[in-house]
Image 1 (cartoon, rainbow, N blue to C red):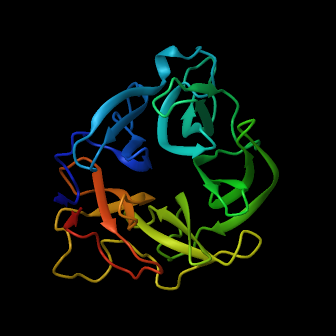
Image 2: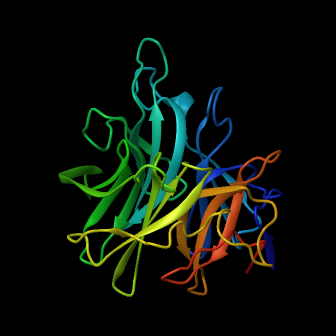
Length: 301
């Protein structure tokens, strides 16, 4: 079965920042949903699928209309992610309160549940205790059992330990990478971190909107060691050299998640679009360390 990139015909509709997990032999999808830039955003939606093709709507996991008016995470839901740990389910997401009375900055929040399709309980306290804006929270489980929360902090990607029992961060905030120097592909800003561990190495995916939207990698030997940006960055970009298998319907692509499929193969899932089309899901198989390329036209499953 072939899935076109981007999948403009997806039953999940237009979506940004897609994140998929495999749980009990079924794929579960969350992501930023319309309206993106203005108008009331309803919250965090979820879909499920047996095959990454036919998506069934599971409902609103985080419902803006059910929150008290004073919650700092009442509006503008962006970049949700699913995380599963010891039978407990977490959805991280960005949000603000854009009312005049309770106005707040964009921050990262978490909701928890005992079942993957909820009901989820929103914790209305920002995950990272800083004055600055934070966004794009990502939870990563290391082999030693430590859970790390990665997020964007005004030109930096940082990490802090996360306690799944309390759903709170603790300890030192560690600087992981910074945006690039002037003129670099990632010089304006970085976001959308996602970490996988392969062959003993930590691969940190991230995106930049400096010249469109593109994805790069930083690599480390351990959480106590430096993350070094790959010199061949960006890894997935419409600025990379063309090949005959490239999609002709992607101009911008980014904010990816990573997944092992039912057959054990590694894939990267991100949104892509071109002028005249809304952002939609792209999927491609990946091997580590990856080489620079453009989004492929199809993914075969």
